[in-house]
Length: 103
Image (tube, rainbow, N blue to C red; front, side, top):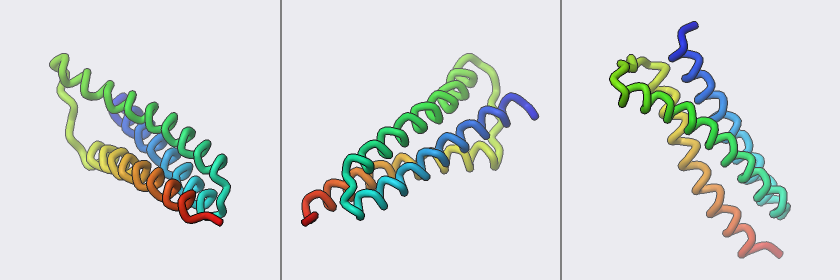
């Protein structure tokens, strides 16, 4: 496997881990376990940070003159990263909403 593919799979894996944490946060929030929900969001942010580090390495590689091949795998990895970033913001808002209307 080429270096690019390894980086992309790390990006996808970390974005996927973050997404899983965010869905756990939503469930915990729905069950009014707000401390758990916020901890899951923190875990998601840690995974997203790792994903962004892999993504940044590709940007630095291209900025230094090394060609990064645009592939379906790269597009998928970036899509997963951005979708998870959006889900993170929605999750934070949902937690606030659940807190507001909890018993």
